[in-house]
Image (cartoon, rainbow, N blue to C red; front, side):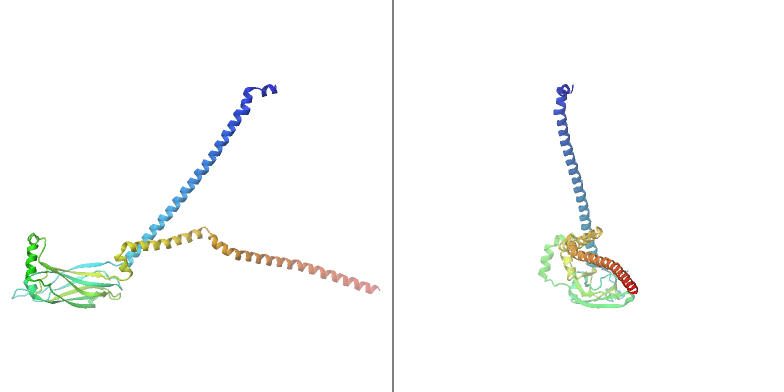
Length: 333
């Protein structure tokens, strides 16, 4: 029966063809499945690592940009402060015109200080004056200014001369003909803008910060449309570079912050991982080995001392017994 069962074609096909093929296919499937699982796990780990690295890099980049922005707005003052100047004067009672010098009080700030200490500033008075015959005949006139702190304390004062630019009659005629459409349509006016630099290198005192300015035109015949007080920061050194080349300065500053922030991140990472780089570990391995060897030698010496002490105690007891036996023998003899 066994021989017949063995010679059965169905059994023969099942044992020698079907099962080997099934086992081969199953093994191939398991191998590919394991490989795909390993590949998927590796891909997931790679994606997770890339995501973590991208998050850390973006955080480092934004921290570097934020630090540079904070430094820029803390270190760089406002470039220009503009305040309108409203001139006041005393009118004459009996004749046409004014009977006092035009003057104005300009409140720069209501706070304790407006200007940055140890930063030079240029203080200018911008005058819009018509090209009238009175202003042309006026010639030179003086413009004075006083910078005062709270309570009216005088910090600094200055006086500068000013006058209209000279234009010949031919120049005026050609200019009038050329700009006639603009003059008729009120787009342009027959006026000149004078820039009187009152302070070339003014520095605010931290103990007496400037809060008010007093301006005076020392001429009763000067005709003025309007005027403004401009306080412009005069940059030097690093501030000049940051103001003149903002893109290059931003690139250098952010790159520097990026280097130091990355260094802090790397050191913090090693500290949190409670480990050091292999190079530093290799340098300290010799010291660690010597310390371990010293500890082992000390422990071995201690053990030897303990063993030797017990050995010495046994020898002394044997010698005492021998001495007692010798004494007994002598007494018998």
